[in-house]
Image (cartoon, rainbow, N blue to C red; front, side, top):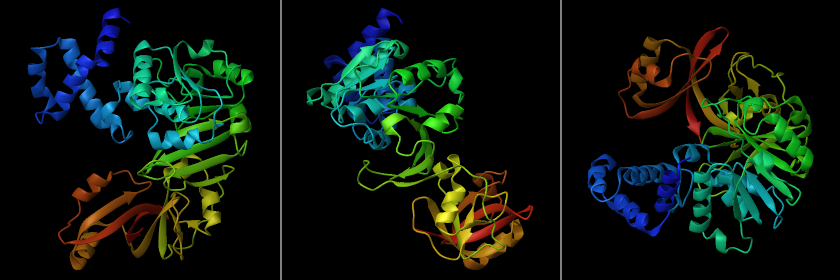
Length: 402
């Protein structure tokens, strides 16, 4: 990395850039129209950094409540754990004990761990280490009693003997393309295993679609975590951080607010393909959370609530009693029809349905493509759920229950 680029990022973190960042944030003009005015007063590169940072801060608001004061890179923001999920994860780590956050990036998990104990953030990218340190300062974590620190180093070269536990977020696209194969991550699986041998009290952040090595699945507790209807990450908990070693867990966090405001919903068990199939769709239809599906715990969820699948080719569940849990979305069924556009349009016309939420499982078309073929004119609302049943696509009309 060129010294000039590092100097520009150091400038971005300083008092001079602060007034430009404030000016851009307060100006109602689109960023592209502000560029020309900025270039007359600062260099093209610094203009780019200021405008980019303004856009990144806007996008980061969904992840960080203090986004307008923090610093990001495009990749750093994309890969950063949001503050709700990071806070939930940090609660598993020992309190007031020395911790290490390897491949810390701009500091998503690091900031939460810094509220937990004296943490060392480690990354080999000099830009993101600058930004991580700035984010610690911005959020006043430098003035806390734990005194976090940032190390510019390769995670593979770190000695873990002085840490009570460690967290790692390996680079999942070291060659430029995202991969879910742990062997292709950096640090690679072999290095992560060596670090585990050195200190088994560990948490590894992985992509939800990752297929962990068999030995990890036997040693660790694998937890798929979702928020806002999206499975965000898989965490492999090792050593004393694992509550049920060898088991899988699916956890749903509150869609809004900081972690701790609402108790997370969770379920754990062993993966299974054994799922009873209902002879018919009952009074209620249930759409499982993505974390449950990613963890392959649908049979455990069904057994807990006495539910069954609507078909062997569908992940929708059904039953005759409502279920109030964040593990599934609950819908009260009004009609079960063939997926026929004319028939559906007749029903929509007769009931004045114009507001339609469309959900589908095992159906090729997107909800937008399906919507364009339907006639929606009224002011009533409904939910349309499409799923294969008996080799054909069924259209289930329902209303969502909160």
